[in-house]
Image (tube, helix red, strand yellow):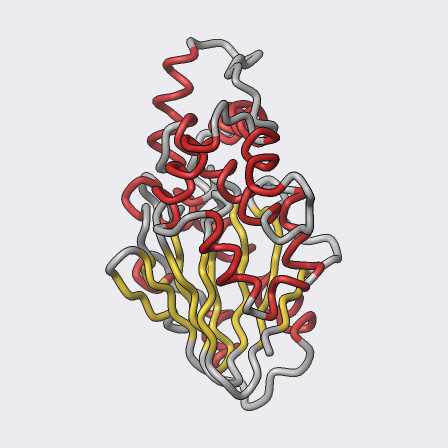
Length: 276
């Protein structure tokens, strides 16, 4: 059975890191449907095999991999007795890790070693025993983040601030993309597209579908039509088409699939709604 956990203590670089999670699987390999919450991820496979299927492509997580923003049907596979840590990066942080525009890694995954070398991670993978995952995060992953970010932080300081203004509006599903910073709306939309990998409007639609996927796990009398209305869709048909466009299945099919996995009653998994 998969255990889904979140690191609850404070962590470095909150302007670049949204949160840190880890998944531990039991003796049977499991595949889960995956709907991105719009955060690129640094995924670190500590034991066993972990892979991500995005569309028709298959990506095995080799030691440490960068996964770009996903906006299409995807699946996450955990091998028997595998442990995988996910460092969720803020949407504007990806260029720091890959030294290029985030759009290049959209719907893809590439080994971190292709972009940068981390001596700290090399020491981690040389260990015979891991110990508590929290200790691994604090003693290896935190120093690795310092190492990589200090080495590659060449993004203009105004960039995260500019993008985060737009990001907050999108997170709140705010239709108005106003920002107090100087510059036109079109300028920030273009900046967002280049450094995040999606346009603000497509990102907003992605977050709606992520929220919908979590609401589908709740036993609510309003059902799918209620979820559709709560997320700002004017009719159920539009919601169903949007959901299927991002996931490849209908809301009803998705709910049946996820309810058959251990994740549906995992409070930590469901708590993602708070920040999606």
